[in-house]
Image (cartoon, rainbow, N blue to C red):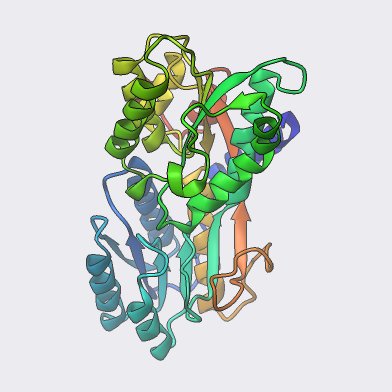
Length: 350
């Protein structure tokens, strides 16, 4: 894990210092983002626009307010207004068929951005982080922090996963659970709520308030007598924030280990304050740089960089993919990973 982190941090810092390459200037790129409600999508959109414009592209960036019909309409308008390439972070991976068909009819390449576009042969490429690895990083963190190989246990575990409409949520969940299930099966980890399967622990739209409400119910039903919940596996930061809110209002036991993902500002502040243990860091600058490179390669008729041609089957085809590598931040390394790399300033985390 330490070797992985050191390698990835070097990659992050190198990527942040690279000057943008200039490709096919004047071409138009449509960028469709799901919502402005989560910090990470605002950062993704801003990074994407800055990188693309620095490389000489015209950018049509749109946010869809977590409404599928709005996203459909926005993508169709991008096509009608002359987009040469589309970069799409879908609200629901299987709900954009009409727009994708329109893109295919107009010979417009489509890059699925961080969320795989499902059930369509119009998807040219997929750019994301290694989503299964995100889950394994969270799972391994729990194993190491609790010393599950040596500790007697049992430890109480609860699970809050992501949006069932987001294909990535299953990868996050499976990556973590593939490591943790053996400890659940031997009784070293105990899920007192009994909620283990993905359908039982999923959080529609990754909403903080939904995660909070469910966590409050779990706490009142299983931990109101002062029983400790030792660890709460949360797939991302918006769900982790909901759990943290619920714990603050409804829990009197020892504070649990809490995982997350995205290193959102509020969650990073909570890590510093001891209210969240870790968050998987996916540097959107790295992903944006890779997508800009892929866009340029597409428009210049060059071979497009991919490093996975087997994993991401969207139900119609296996989509050629480029997977960036995630690392985790915690109270011990956040300054190096987040501040020294220029991702945040110290003032933002005060």
